Image (cartoon, rainbow, N blue to C red; front, side, top):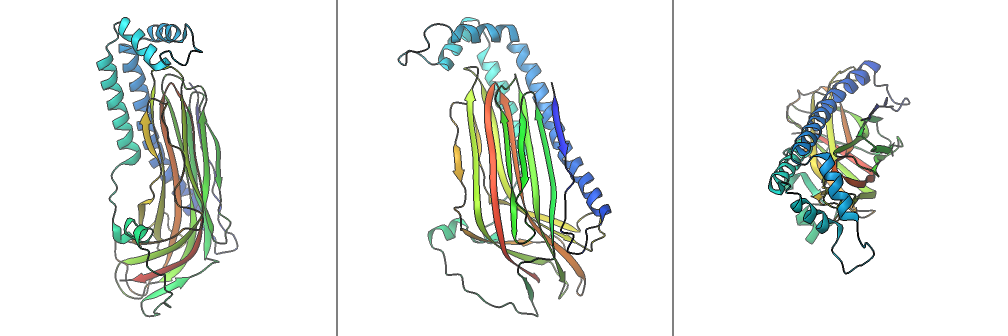
Length: 360
């Protein structure tokens, strides 16, 4: 088994005040540790899933069933499908189908817990683009910021940051593209493409990228910060297509886009003072099954759609303190495959129209 693991050095806007190398290196190391911890758990799940599956469904028996199911007339559309014939052959071979199904269900449930976790949706976080606004969108009225309460930022921003990208693939899987759309003007986002055209017994695909912008802000009073990001979609397509290689296979795959906000005390920080995210910024795709049913391409927001998202820090900051506030988009794909070929991708680019920051 071959594992591809690539951590690429990110870049910053050198025309703005530089993010020091120490901040960059330590942040990458911390994020790599967090990413590696999740990937290690997923890889342990992949290995244990494969071992337990081989105990109740030995490879030699699996190959014999696959060969028998693929035999006979395959060009007759009136005949039974490959999945049905595989199931009949497995029953004839006295495979414990109940044990196999229970093993698969437990593995994919655990996979879902590891890659999705818990995220609560709050309607107040989305001013434009929430479920309520989908029915009746209020007119967007411009109101100049109150200098005693908030500060408004427009492009170009203080600094751009292609914060991190990470890849992981096993077997014949490959992350074929992990590209940033950050242009250091107002655009951000990424294109992630992963494929596995000949999945082995159990394979894993993971890809992640995050980038965005930093602006300076001096707190006006002691309290938490409210950061209002006004964004317009340029493109946002999530895609999952699969092919059942065995006739009796399954998979679980997810895509997700988050809006991330982090606050730094200064450019020399090794870690953000506080970091939060809107987990439902882009709901993405979440599918599992036999590989014969898949969502294909989903246009999440249509091009030109506007979203205004409110994010709140989880800690208070003292009055009169100069901070750096970062807002970015983080895209991520995960896939656990059992003899299922897959083409999974995210193509997401956003225009950051403005940032409004206030102490409350």
